[in-house]
Each structure stands twice: as C-alpha cells, then as structure tokens.
Image (cartoon, rainbow, N blue to C red; front, side, top):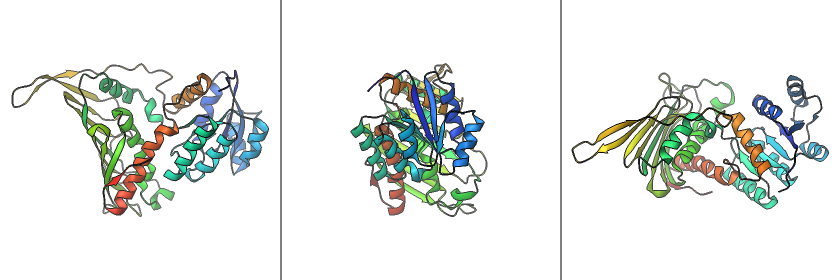
Length: 344
C-alpha cells in the first residue's frame, strides 16, 4: 500500500460518539480531518464549530464528499443499520475504514464487508476499545505467561440495571445485541480461542422495564475444548458489576478472578497431593498506562498507525466477525431452544 506523509480523514455520522473520535484525530501529527458527513447537515456543522474544524467539507452525501476530498481513511460512526452501506461505499472508494460497533447489523452484511476489504486491499477494522484497557492487558499478560497452564474454563458475569429509556426499552434481544459483543470479544481476546458452538437461554425477568428479553445465559464451547459461560442482565438492580464484567478464568495450575476494574487476584498451584492443593498468591504485572491503554483514543491511534505502517489492525473485520458471530449464534440458540454451531 502506498505510504503517505499526511493521512486525510472523513468522518460519517456526527452524533455524540463522533466527538471523541475527532478529538483524537485532531491531536495527531500527520493527520488531517477533511470532511464531515451526516444526514442532518446541521449536526456536522455543529461538530465542526465545536472542534474548530474550519477547513472541512460538510455534506449529507458521502459519495460527493469522498469524490471531492479524496480521503485515505473513513471513520464510520453511523447507526448499525447504516454500517453496511457506509463502510462498503468507503471501501469501494479506496479508503481504509474504522467503524463503530457492531461490524454490521447482520452476519451476512459483515461477510460482505470483510470480503470487500480483502478485494480492494484496504484495512477494515472495528472499534473494540476494551482491548485497549490497562486492566484487561494485565490479565492477558498473566495468562500469556503460561505459568498457570492451559485455560479450561472461563466465566463472565454482567449485571447492570440500566434505565436507558428510548429505543433500547423496545429492542428484541437487547442485552445480546446491544452489549454482549463487548464481553464476547473480551473472552476471545483473553483466551485466544474461537467459538465452536453455543446454547443460550434468554428471558425477561418479572419487574423488568424492557419489553423483551433483558437477561441471558450462554454456554460456549470454544476451540481447544475450552468452555466459556456468559451470564448477564440489563435489569439487575443492586450490586452492579463493572461495565467490563466480572470474570473467573480457571487454568490447569491456578485461577484468576477479575472484577473488570483494578481488582485482579491470581493464585498458582504451589503443591499438590493432598485433598486440596496449596497455592501462592501471585501479583499481576503492572501495565504502564500509555497512549496504548486509553480505550477509544488508543484504538484510533493504533488504526492510523497500522495504515501508516502497513500492518493489520488488531480488531480487523476478519477477526471481529468471530465475536459478532457469537452474538447472532446466541440469538439463534435462544430463539430455537437448541445448541447452535457458530460460523462466520
């Protein structure tokens, strides 16, 4: 791929999330925001005024803005239903694309985008900001060290009583579609395993303020014989977990618990032979908080570095489609009441 000193960026979808994307982009050397696109032109004008982007082209027609600005990169911050059309148009115009979650609104659409990116030889990646968190990296490092042996079982719990109001209160599969992708992707990142099959049960608890299924339990078989379980609810009042979920990771020579925040506990087998083994408490390595551990900002910076250096993004569509496939397979299982193979 051709290397350029200055990378030109167009952002599509100037809603609330776009502010953080643009703030990061405007802080980077060798990057120029050249266009803002939104179906509501005033939203784009407002964002430009807020961030003092006086030289950008603003429009409602992505094709016209692409034609006139010739960007290298498109940031897709549109609603999920618009991800396919927006990302596909940008890729076919020769742009690299970093998209908000989810990769697409359906698995078929996701496959279309992954194939398009490969066909035009452009990078296509998804915003999975939780992979750029210092605490998940500490857990990842502890597992990658090999001191605990091979993982056998991973459990994650997500319980938050979220009173959103608005469209989420009326969504089908609101927990699985709206939130579980974060935890599923984190499970893949921590374990290095891919999904094989899933059995999922959804329900709407008594007293729920949602119209449809706000709670779910899913059991995933992963590659290597690993078992991963997910338990979650959007309507669990009290004793909330963190947004990153609460985790237990069991390996052959020890275990890790992680509350999704700063509390990481590791025990490693010291001696076996009795009824219970004895254990050493292990202090997790510190991960220096740098520009690579700043969530959204780090994900954007890394994607731009990948484009500049010609290396594949960590959250490329070819990888992230596996996390998305977990979501849709879990939904299929919940609807059918059967164990479902996960394919992508």
